[in-house]
Length: 77
Image (cartoon, rainbow, N blue to C red; front, side, top):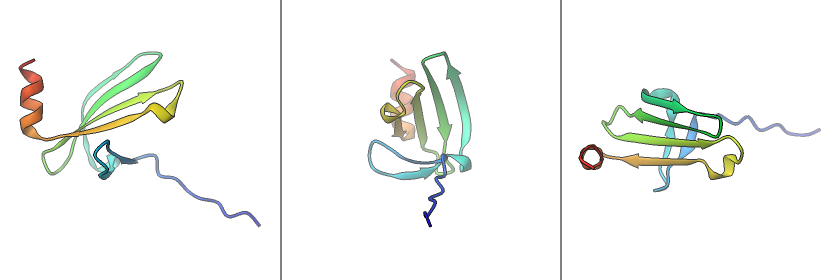
């Protein structure tokens, strides 16, 4: 008998090693084309996660955690 592992696609690990559940976040920006999607989610803590999903190679997906200060820097670039 094989054991079956259920994977929650909303659970991700950020580039800094923090595990997050994207189902509990607010989707702020959603962008996609045929190659990848680029979304920004806001956490209840006020932090943000940039979610980059590559359709051709999901092993290259990235989840980047940013705080308010870092978001302000990005706005001014």
